[in-house]
Structure formats: C-alpha cells, structure tokens
Image (cartoon, rainbow, N blue to C red; front, top):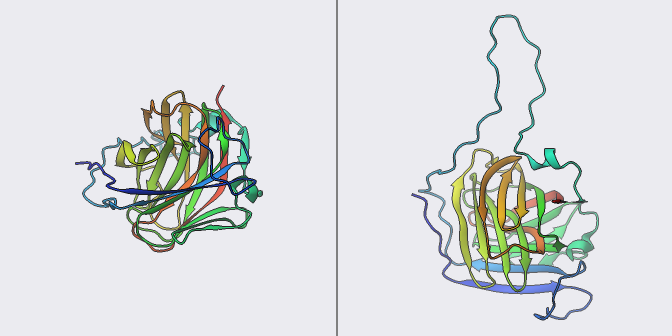
Length: 276
C-alpha cells in the first residue's frame, strides 16, 4: 500500500540574491527578473524506499505491426510519442543552456555546507553532500502562469530515494510545488506552503523513468490554470490540480540526497513555452 509521508519538522533558510544584500520584503508585489532565490530545507522524516507498490498504469509501448510474411521489411524511424509536449509545441519561448550564470545568481557557486549549486561547463550542477534528506534548490526569474517547462537532468552515482526535479510557481508568500523523481524510478508531487510540505501525488513507480546511476531524464510540467500535468521523457505520468497555486511564480531545480553521499545531478538545458 502506498504510504503517505509526513514531514514532522522542516527548517527553512531563504536567501535572495539581488543587487544588494537585503532580505526580501514581503510587500514586494511581483518578482523581477534579477531576483534569484535559493532555499534549503532539511527533511527530518526520511522517505521510505521499500514497501511501495506501483499504482501507476504502465505507459503502453509504441504500437507496432506484426509482419504477415517472411519477406524482410525495411526498418522505420521510431514514432515520437503523441504525449510529448515538445513535439507539439515546437521551438520553446525561451531556452537556457546555462551560459549566463547571473540568471541563476551563480556568478559564484552557492555552498551552505549541505548543498552546492554552481554553473559548470554550461551545466547547472547541484550536489547534496550528505545522505541526510537535506533539500536544496535554486530558482530563476518568474514566468507566466500558463506554461510548459522542461529540464534535462543527468545523475551521477545514486541509489534508492535519492531525488531531484523541478520546482515551479515558487515565491516567498506561497512556497511552491515540487515534481520529484527518485534514483530507483519513482515520482511524486508535493506542495510547500512556506513552512511544511503536503502531498499532491504520492510516490509512484513509472516505467518511463530511466532509473539507476548515470542516467538522463527529461522532466516536464504542463501548467494551465490550476491543472498540472507531469511528464518524464515525453510520457505523460499523471494529471492533477493545485488550487493553492495557479498564477505566476519562479521556476527552478532541486536535489535531496537520502541514500548517497555527494549525490549530484546536472542540467544541460532548461526550456519553457508560453501556452496560448
């Protein structure tokens, strides 16, 4: 039976990097592009990595036809999944290949002793030093509410519940939503209200996830009003709603090592499309 995860205690540190060293003002009505946030939280209740039954219906394989004769037939190019938003939306409104570290407030690496985040060789690299469940994240400037966002993540050595993913519609007043996948091939969606996490989609297994060490996964989130669709490698995982967040907010990436010391992920590309 899928087990709900309760976070008994969350410690939050919020650091905003802007033109000065001032803390954010709660009266600020709308984030500006040069405001970049880093937030970290320690999860004191470790995420279970066993006794989780898969409740996600496996995605069907690309249909194929059975040969009706022994005559060899020429091979064909694999069909692109009709689920894949990238194939439907065309060129992104904006593509970030991490050539400008300042867009992420990372002209110098960020390091708090738990998480290190830096731009390295045109990649956004996040490292979780200890297997303690400390979650660290980085956001860039705000985008419009109705958006499809996508990030290509590559892992190093990992195991079990080591996790990483996309956060979206994040701001200082309402927290944000976190789309996570784990090293062992599960995914979840959680809402953070600024003080604690609540589950929107419990951990589920997904055949579309490339599990294990040294893998690359393309994570996507479709945001339209209060509707949220989650994608991995072009395959639709699930659709849900979050009435707490339906407007504008920051987007970014996060990491949390639960099993592997010095667990690291890197992003080679971060794209978004404005939905008309």
